[in-house]
Image 1 (tube, rainbow, N blue to C red):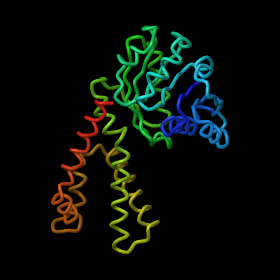
Image 2 (image 1 turned 45 degrees about the horizontal axis):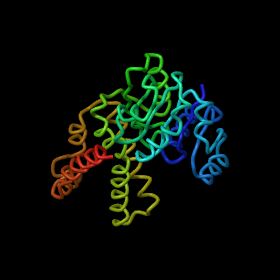
Image 3 (image 1 turned 180 degrees about the vertical axis):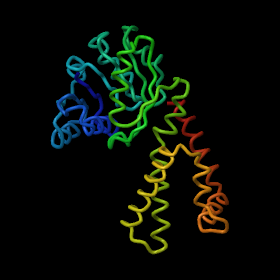
Image 4 (image 1 turned 90 degrees about the horizontal axis):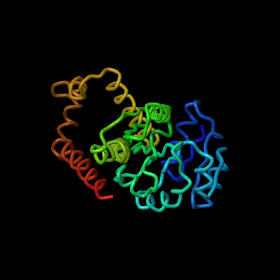
Length: 265
């Protein structure tokens, strides 16, 4: 199976890195296209996929077509490759806010298999969270192929398409929020005298360990928080400070605003 990724930017490379890191896919299983020659040169310098600046070539030599381009380029790309696509292809779009119906409207053949996916950047290290939705042309075998792709670099879950703007906010854009929180934790530690390197390491392992504890224990996060907060202790003092500064409200509003933005793409 040959996987063609149109767009050699952050998300396209994250998928490539995550899939090859899993050991289930070889770098030579991929073709990556991009309009930027320097991007292609950098990819070839560091990895071993086939590369091209001709999207039609990629389509002709691929079984899976991944559209890892920004939303405002989707129509241009699909129009360009429209007559090269066939019913044998599975088309996977990463474009935020672009519904399956809209993707279909750009294609001549309405019987093509289309998958809408919302992955995130941690898939580059095998820790991604991807939501997928399928059009009616996708068979169970096609779905299994797509699940295998995203399971190789994290967790994948089928979602109703109406929830995709929310998933764009929560998991697609969410890593940015996590990195801001990680940086803030480290800044607080540096302010109190810890070295920058030690602060980042401690904050990152804190987030990693806490997330894994939640996932493995399946315990409500409120209970896990209570388990750390002893009466009159240090943790509840920190929590009270966050609550005083409307931490929860700020996070909730950030997700709401991000989901609204996704709906306007």
